[in-house]
Image 1 (cartoon, rainbow, N blue to C red):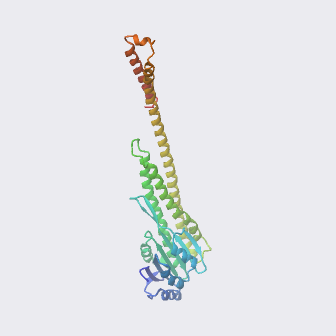
Image 2 (cartoon, rainbow, N blue to C red):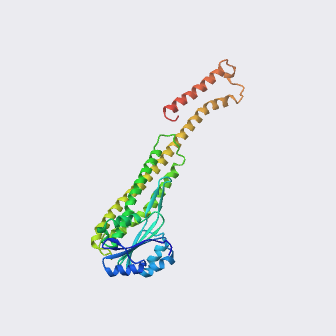
Image 3 (tube, rainbow, N blue to C red):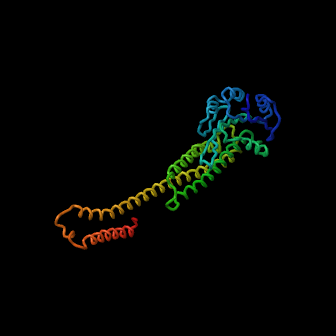
Length: 330
């Protein structure tokens, strides 16, 4: 195999130990000892590269297909010889305001854990390092690895949600800034941000049901002592989901407020246009009457007729201007 195997190790009584180079021999050794398990980590394996793992660990064909195909929703599948958990870690690039999801599959069975990673957003080296520094947790076997991986993914959900909140507050400030700012692309930015939150919800929302199942009885390969730990992960996930739902509602409110502002501004513009049109209509009407060239128009023979008409037109325009100004149309 190429470097598809990121790491492979036997853990005896919670501590990393040297084992056979061939992982099939390592699995037999772990099962023979009883207090050991094998953890193998894979990164984007192909079908051919995964064949040996499938045969040696007895993984279910449907789970293997999901692990290779990727693009799965978070879920928990229970098979005769293993558990199959799908997680979707998220990363947020605040420079371009983009949420990116990757995929992480965890197989747990008799004395083994297989993790399959797709994408660059879910490195497990740090999770493995922290577990190796805490043998008391690793002594609980493969379930401890599933818990640690789930906990790391869910905790990062909360971190990403906090980053989204900061950027959303900045966007909210722009929307409710005093008039005159550049709001040409504000609606499209709000909608794009809403799409990123939706991508986040697709990763975190469906994971609630698997975490609830793992925190309760009846799931094979999960010891009852591990259930409180999964319950803690479920509580953190609930917080993250509530956080994301709050962001989504706030975005909807901001978008509605922005559209209402745009409507008010358009109404203001229409009032201004109507006011100026009304002021222009008065002298136009008077000038139109005197442009009809009737013979019998007494004002035409009056010395003060022309200046009087001009003054009347100016007075009428000034009166309309003051009226519209007082009513806030100008």
